[in-house]
Image (tube, rainbow, N blue to C red; front, top):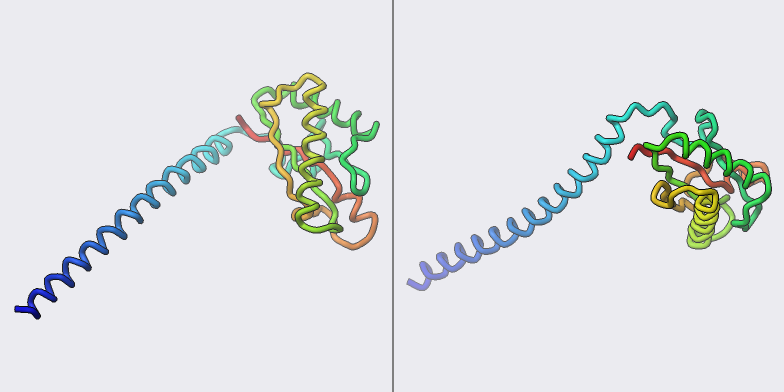
Length: 174
C-alpha cells in the first residue's frame, strides 16, 4: 500500500511539475511571440517600402543629400563645417516626409567601452538638437550610440580615428 501511495504521489508530482513548467514556457513563448510579431511587423513594414537608399545610411556615401558628419577628438561640439552638412541633411529629411532618421553616434577605438558609448550618445544628441533647431520634428529622429563598435576605418592611426568619430544618418521607413 505504501509503495502504491509513493508511486501515485511521484506521478502527481511529475504531472504538477510538467504542467507548471509548461505554463511558464507557454507564457514566455507567448511574450516572445508577441515581441517577435512586433519586430516582424516592423521589419515587414520597412521591407514593404520601396527604399531607394542604402541601408547603411550616410556612411555608404550613396544617399545624395545625406552626409555623415565628423567630430574632433574627445568632442561632441559641432564645427562650422558640420553645421553646414547638417543643414543639408535637414533639407533631405524635410524632402522625405515618410522617413524617420536614426542618428548613430560613433567613436574611435581610444577610450573605454563605457566612455565611448557615452561620447557617442553625446554626439548623437548634439546632432539631433541642432536638427531640431533647424525646424525638424524631434519625432522624425531617433538616436543610438555604438561607441567604437562599428568602425568604418581600421587601423590605429589618426586617419582611421578621424573617420570613425562620426554621426551616421540611417533612414528608416515610418
